Figure 1 (cartoon, rainbow, N blue to C red):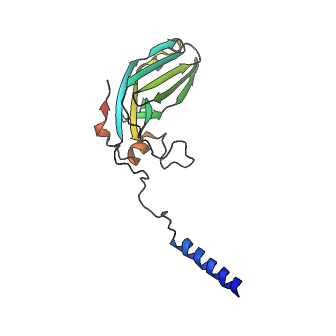
Figure 2 (figure 1 turned 180 degrees about the vertical axis):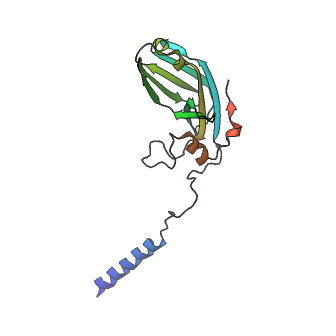
Length: 178
């Protein structure tokens, strides 16, 4: 009898814990990040020319101050829609044309960011437009936002407009970097 009473008591305690757990799957708030000191922002920069490292590698480095609780995403303007709106593509990205391959990538620290352009062949001979007059958008986000490495991120970071909408960024306040 003592064994049955002990087992029944154990089941009752486990049920209490199971029932008291909550699941916020029905939460209608799609913004999953909370941050009190980082305001998501967008900066725009026109890189008129990159610095040659060697014929197949170019860089652009700019001072840019971040706190340790901020993160950067960099997008490159690849086109313009028929209505005149820019088309933004998240870096890294790679292009292949009849003459070779060109890749754009970036890194950042708390003091600066660097955009890299690397090619399979001499980029300037390939197509000088790859390294001149390029427009980029630098998106500053909270450092602990859901990772782009996550298997189920809450937003498609490849989609510039989805990121802007998810983080409630006012594009009319885009700042021009010089």
